[in-house]
Image (tube, rainbow, N blue to C red; front, side):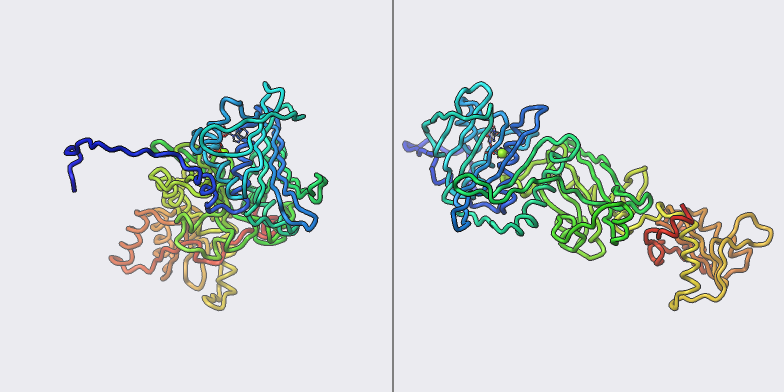
Length: 494
Ligand SMILES: Nc1ncnc2c1ncn2[C@@H]1O[C@H](COP(=O)(O)OP(=O)(O)O)[C@@H](O)[C@H]1O
Ligand SMILES: [Mg+2]
């Protein structure tokens, strides 16, 4: 290793000039069709006129044989002032924080990924004519003028397409439109939409072949207790030094009957939120649009994908202190991001206090025990004990009263006592069960709960090791009684 202090200045120097190869090179990125289009949509959204709906139209122009020859995006946003145009075109020329724009690269990456710039036209409210450039390069570029009917806006046309656009209407309907609807759901929401987004296939003469209106696509939840379209965790605030985020988490409906009960159409197979292995987990949003879809094992919330997580849904909304990579389909995995994800992992695994100041293992249960009435769990346990071929019991009683003692045993089955707690069990719960066992001369006891305090574990160990009492701590979820309530149970227990 040299000591940099030891250098001396030589006679020579070198000149580093911008190279125009960069413009095409920016197109060699990892974007798929929706990501490319999103860079351009982001720009229209970011430039929207406050309190006005921005209209964005995406058009694929096809020749007589239906082959794509051009792509055009048009918006009626603010437009780019002429004195800013050069900076907007220069790679990394305008960098923004807390905005849908960020690195000053998006438009250039999107254009180069699609093909070659035909023209960029833009008009602000102050301009009488639109300004137009035909080429992106370093140095001076000519600006043309043209009459343009809209008051303001930007139109970008790209020719010599090398991006493989699919013009198959079925594939656009199923693969592209729903994902754009999901990505921009916060901007497309039915009440107070901020953007209208159209996708069209048009002929060279401008006539329309097909048109799609992109509408908001949101995950459908089924809340096990309230039985409506609601997540179990709603915008729970998380923060660290220099960052903040919110977590929304819940479960998708599992049966057609559950959709029907909520009066919602079942999610089609092509939906971004269809229940399946590849679509499990949470979306990550930044500036209110989805950057990454269904993340769970990908960000280390669970180690591997497993079908039991298929119904998990949610949103990680990154608020402050995060940045995207230079392509916006990835996040910088810095310490803020790592810390945020590890907090989420702990909340969802029940290792960290979550909503309602409680710890709860959200990933373990589809239905959360505290959302199921204790009486219902007790009756389900009794019925399972008397019918299961595995652990069959002849005589099963619920609310079994011991002579002379206040209180009762939740389930008493063939001289075994079962006590249920929908929350975490404490040392007192352990000793209460032991009291029943002692007085009732019951040889075997099970305390079933949603987790056990350290005190409960010490108490149980003491009873077992020092007093030889056969009392076991069992997680509620180890019994097959945690499913969401049936309509009959709803009528009876709620
Ligand atoms: N449709 C548009 N309307 C108004 N301004 C735009 C539009 N597209 C791009 N710009 C301007 O160009 C700048 C650079 O955009 P872009 O290349 O997409 O960079 P970034 O990677 O930051 O999104 C933006 O910050 C904005 O000022
Ligand atoms: Mg941008």
